[in-house]
Length: 66
Image (cartoon, rainbow, N blue to C red; front, top):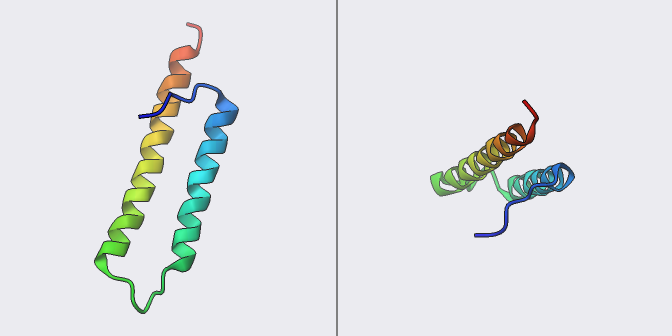
């Protein structure tokens, strides 16, 4: 597992890259030949991005002064 990304700008860059990868995968899928495994892979990618957003939010919320 890699080191946590603590810088907000780097977090945003990471999320943008992940979303762009998702869009590239989505663009390469042929709707006529897509199977359940392909759909599951897309769902997993979205869930991974959502999880990372939540992790970044918790990390940034913890840094806020009370």
